[in-house]
Amino acid sequence: MRRARTGDALAFGLLVQRYQRAAYSVAYSVTGRHEDAQDAAQESFLVALERLEECRSPERFAGWLMTIVRNRSRNLVRREVLRETDPVPLAASSGTPSPEQETERNELRESLGDALAALPEVQREIVLLHDLEGWKHREIADRIGIPSGTVRSHLHFARKALREALGAASGEKANRSET
Amino acid sequence: MSQEWPASGRENDGLGRDMELAEILTAIDPASRDPNYWLRFRSWVMAAAAPELGRRRLMRELTVGDLLASWARGVVPAAMAAAVIAALVLSRPSVAPTPTAVGVEELLIAGMEEEPIPATLSAGEGPSFVAFATETF
Image (cartoon, rainbow over all chains, first blue to last red; front, side, top):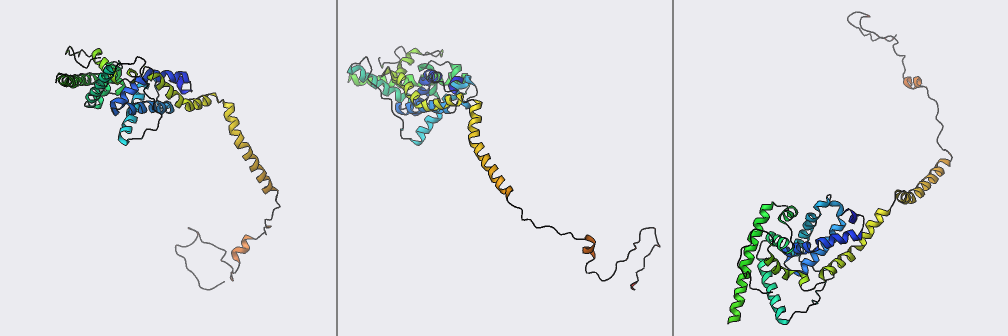
């Protein structure tokens, strides 16, 4: 972080590489939309670069960055800001899936989106950071600013709700295919 | 990937990372549709950050001498201009009027018709009362 302050592009690139997925997950947990999450995460890195002097301690960079991401995402949702950044188009995957696989994946994505949307924002953020990004309870607690026990509690309820929602979606699909 | 989840129905809440759920959650990871997504994400951020990074490099490379030089570039001409103006003002001929001497005592008694009483009374010097006479000596 200190090197990034002096304009070292390599150092800043490493910070982006290290936290881009977590930033996206936090943004997604707030916005619930890929495009908005992408915009909020990208813009947050630019804001963080401009304000690097405000982050006094490099150890707190991740939590500080996630606060910026959360605030930008909330503003994006609240104000319904028109997208001003150049989008990063989602190119076709190199291993082209079959139409059936693609359909199944889209259905899963839709069910997952609905299930996540039903969770409180803090639970979405925690389950994505922990189970998708692999952050530890203590890391999440430090970076969100809540006790570790609360993180575990949120994680427990988030998983339970996701299981129920996805299980129900799975059952509905099975019923449809039988009829 | 199957949507039949949770297949085992297990409650994995030792609260370690739930790999089964992690696999499901990868569906919202943009890289699941585009393997180069994160590479391009970083490229976009780096391109947008280039001006700010350049500004920061420039600030770091500025030495104290550069700062003084940039400061002097503005201040020295201004100081020279001020000196020229001051010299012009000081070199103009003086037009101030010459003062005339006036006696203070003359001014104090100017317009008075009678001479003032020269003596004054002080405590313990006379009787305990004072009488005033109307005659002028």
